[in-house]
Amino acid sequence: MTRRALVLGSGQIGRAVALSFLEEGWGVTCAQRDPSKMPTSLTARGVVPVRLDRDDDTALQDVLMTGFDAVVDTVAFNPAHGHQWGALAGKIGALAVISTGSVYADAAGRTLDEGATNGYPDYGGPIPETNRRAPSGDATYSTRKVALEDALIGGFVRPLIILRPFAVYGPGNLAPREW
Image (cartoon, rainbow, N blue to C red):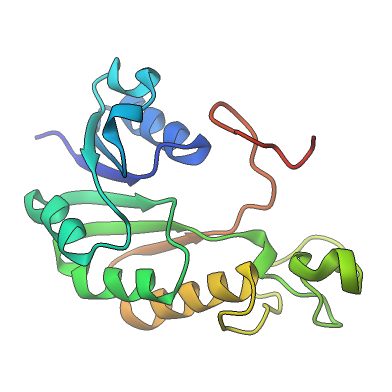
């Protein structure tokens, strides 16, 4: 029996994840608001596109009705998205959520969000997963991602992976920060 994966989003991360699953022999469904805009690099290889507005709880439940061994959410952004997964944990095998490296704060509490105004953080070297984070809240991109992570950690009982990339570049990148 073929293992099945659901990838939310087909941008640069979602595209790479979907192709990686395909290369490992998984069946892949990729969800986005407008499936007609799914990259042909995915549909030509057998990725099944499905319409999904990330904020629509009912639509997300409907997509999950058939069950998935793994879900990768590249578009989760706030605690409501984390709580959604807590309520749906029984419908999937494992969950990976893309957060951001900007959740990390330096010893002075600075994050990348306010770098231009308050100075950029100085992490002093490699950043361990246990590094201090920004406060949880809705004030900035970083604080919303921390709130998302906290909701996931507090409510998801299946295998959970939270990835915190800093700079991602590759096919599907519309505006790389390096420019």
